[in-house]
Image 1 (cartoon, helix red, strand yellow):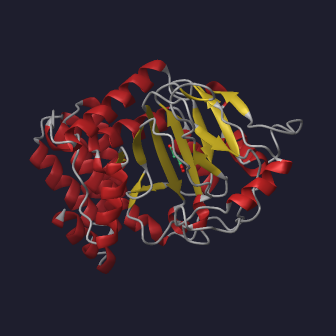
Image 2 (cartoon, helix red, strand yellow):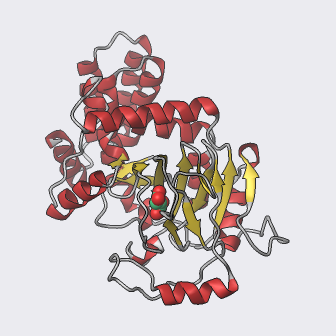
Length: 371
Ligand SMILES: O=C(O)CCC(=O)C(=O)O
């Protein structure tokens, strides 16, 4: 991790390589990678050379291509570090001026409930239009059965390794170096509730990013934000939610992120849950919220007051969608929602929660990774 910090500091101070030098270096490295005879140490050296020349995004893309062709656990950890360096560098963009982007309502006749599509209908217009007009978008089968099973398998390996039984070395669970004491406590809290930060699991991170890219999510969000998105250490989580009945806090994530934040969450059920299934799902108020509701922090720091939720529900009752494995809910920082932990739950629920940010408008205190 020291290496990452050194490179970040270096990047912040310098633009030492001229772009001609950088292009020459990239060409040489691509040629070397194509031959596929490089050892992991050689790839690592080449990648850091590129990154310290201000080309972390290019380094990320070439190492990723190499890892796709010839997977190696050590490359997963390297990729996670490169994502961080590239994520930090991407913060200096200005972002799109027309925010929020204007989208036509793709479901003009939908008066109540969550807009719903099948995965092949996914586009930036449907995502942006549904979230912008109805608060969220339900995507049936966003992950196909193979992608769902592979993600669930990778999540379980990460959580077993987190519990002390690593199966394939550091790539399953490899906590990213954090220095802020608040983050150390935050990670402990997440882990004690059955969560694992996505970026702490380099193998799962690469699997998830490859999957989200292959189904068009990363490109769609790049168009939506006008810049390649980042995800953050503290806000993207692999979850195993135990069936413990308790009162949970309604929240709008934007109420505890920076005021000008631009986000989109891709929440994917990896096991059957929600509705009347015996595994916890999400309860949501399916409407576009224009404001942040008052908080009542007794239950949790960002808990919205139950009175305010009750009042809103007289206009828009809450729903608890059914999720089959691979179904997803896409929403941004304004949606009012909570984990549903009502009576009669008996099974664990597994899910991926992946919050993307426009790097120019990401939460400052969070640790970014380029998607
Ligand atoms: O998975 C859950 O139960 C919580 C999800 C959530 O609150 C979120 O994705 O913002």
